[in-house]
Image 1 (tube, helix red, strand yellow):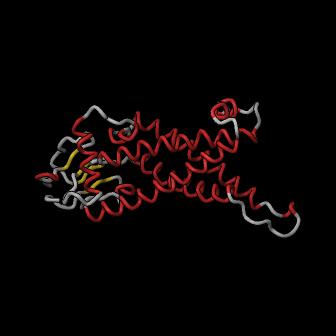
Image 2 (cartoon, helix red, strand yellow):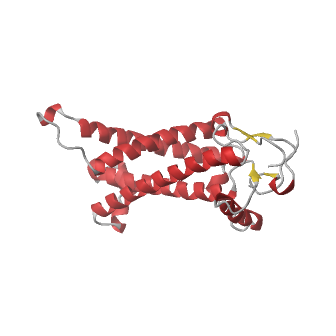
Image 3 (cartoon, one colour):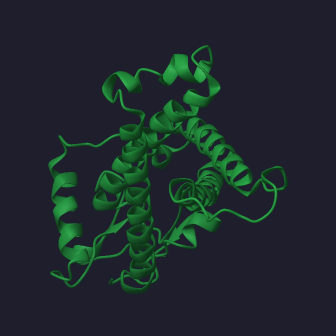
Length: 240
């Protein structure tokens, strides 16, 4: 196999030219597992969170015979715990996995080549350049997006557990760890509002993320969607 040539040469996570191969093992099994479990948890959280914020109309019959909102809340809380455990596992794997496992946790703002790549990829997504650069891991713009998405997930976890602590009580571990949120927003409804807005931020990210993955798979001649199944990134041709 040969390395891509010209302006579309294959680059590693730091923008350096990669070895003379066109298929690279990038995403290890724990990273792929986290990606799909995280995606499922986000779907459950978004759907149940919507109905928690905008409850269904009252159902007929005795209240004791209807527990629909209770099930919705339980699914929301359970998915939240899955999200937290998955993120903790993902952070652990950033330390023990390959270099691409830790890529999204830092931004190399001091690297001029990486900064140039952010603006180049932005031009590529805006159809202002004809050919993309080829990166083994996340391209710089995707790198920035994933970094801020992890910050958004952290915000959702913190505010979510703060709201959960209201029901768990002041003597709960949830309140001891996350009760400080109410010193920032003393009004509980403000925390609800920010948490709800954060959900729409996550939904917007997912829409853009899926669009970008499908677009890159088609237009950049490199695998993205299948990479999160096999772990391998494949570059389909040598000239972009």
